[in-house]
Amino acid sequence: MASREAKLKFTLMRFKGFWNEYKRSKRGTLGLCIVVFYIALALLAPFITHYDPYAPTLKGYYPAGERPQIAERLSKPSWYKSLPGGDALSENLFPVQDHQLSTLESIQAEWNWISINCTAGPNQTEGEQDDGCIEVNYTNPSGDPHKTGYAIVWHEFQYPYKNPPQSFIIHISMFTTNTTATSIKVHIADDAGTPLYTNLETLYLSDNKWRHTYIRSGVSPRLTSKTFPEPGNYSLQVEVTINGEEDVTVRLDNIDLLIYGEVFGILGSDGNLGKPRDILSTLIYGTRISLMVGLLSAGISTILGLFLGLVAGFVGGVTDEFIMRFADFLLVLPTLPLLIVLIVVTQASIWNLILLLSFMGWMSFSRQVRSMVLSIRERPFIEAARAVGGSNSYIIVRHIIPNVFALVYITLATSVPGAIISEASISWLGLFDPTIVSWGRMLFEFTNSGVVNRPFGDYWFWMIPPGIAIMFLAMAFILMGYSLDEILNPKLRQRR
Amino acid sequence: MKRKWAGLNIDLERLSEAIEKFFESKFFRVIKEKNSETIKIVAVPKQGIHKILEQIRITISGKPEDFELFFEAGDYSHSISRLGNFTTMFGGGILFLHGIRSEEELEKLEKEFWDYMYVAIEFFSKER
Image (cartoon, rainbow over all chains, first blue to last red):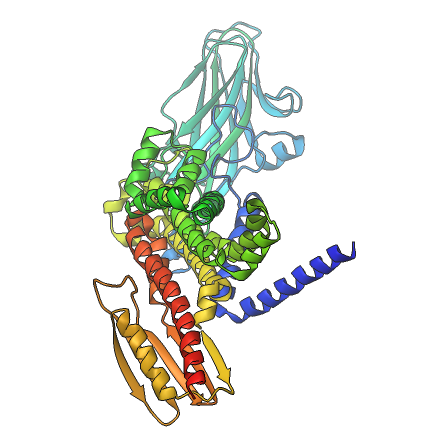
């Protein structure tokens, strides 16, 4: 027990000594700080990002189909508004607070209504999810075929930006009974109530079911500038017209207006078709993939290299020649083209990539280990161990591995950047799993988005951040590797 | 690497000549520089003969009865192998091979040098 404690104490002392030496290296400390920062980002990604890049949609209940996007494509960073002339830029605006009309209070606070030949008002229990809704009741006891019921429900809001938005989406759920001639129109109107936008499609409803729909403006500067020509008060109106001889009930629920501005988030949004992503969230999530690929492939290749280097150096002879010539053969091959071929032949999954990178990364380490083993096995303490009957495995485990182990830390640190850059290169070439969000994938999407031909200043915020992230992470591991090399590499220690 | 000898009374000039001969026998080009306190020998590897990529500097300092020998080589080979290691995907592996072979040769040469030095110093000490 005492010897175990003594061993632990000795190990701690050695670590303390190493740490004191490492701390003195400025570049090593800088590299470590950067790596710790990236690891923290990777671990805390779900907590520090507002949007999940794997599902870049708004939270909330939208039964008309997929939940709406978080921003319009290629929105610029929000801080553009602080630049000269930037105050005119429009931001995302979601004026309806409770689009599910869940409580009487929220309906009364947010919505207004008028009606002619019918009644309109809140209903607390008959909503699409058995919560609140706005109900229009039309009765025609005399059976007059020329009677028309008419109701308007509207929500007032302020649009504070000089520039029009990029686009907007209206979501609405509707329910009718006993009618074949009810029309519902949705308008966006100005302060005076004049419709500036009316959805072109009039919805004729004919059954007892809830129907849900999205009305999308699309990215049309002409339409959005006509709808929101200047800052001011606007209203979202739902107009219900009922013609018929029978009594009719119309219910409206899940009414939402989503206005997508020109700026969004700290780094803007990307150009992904359909569901643009928040670039900052994508960047933070990308840290996970880069670190995972880098660390795992470096770890596996180091273990492989250690094993083969030990075997080659210790066994020697034909085994050594075979392993080293194979290592030399792989070393002189540029691994990127080989990796491209192999990733195309195998499936482009993350695990395949990690295994392939591991297979291509063991050679240099095994050569270094073999070189050290050749030197160590001639030393007197190995001869002494042999003389007292130490087996090969005992000598390897107790004497050789501890002496070459310093190289493991160095190799781990220096192998990671290569793996990170390889993953980024493969992703950038579009050969990596398209469902995985990574920095290389961001660059690939930028390259293939069509905006690459536009002036650099327009969409730099999509391309530069992943490039910088790759550069800093790779540089951090290189700095750490160099510092560890200077401290732990026995050859360098001797020569200094 | 540095090694020290004391209490032997060795002729340092003859020792430096022995070192020159050692490197010349290994086909190095040797340059010697002497001042009052030290003797410096620079061994430059000949291209096409050696895999070693850098110069070796031997410094003899001190007095005949108490002197030190320094065997120094730069870390060019190591830098080359590190660069090669980072760039294997673009064919940098060849640089790594050059670097590591140079390091291996250098280590072998250093071992031979110190073995030779022990023999030479013992011989010179017995001669007096």
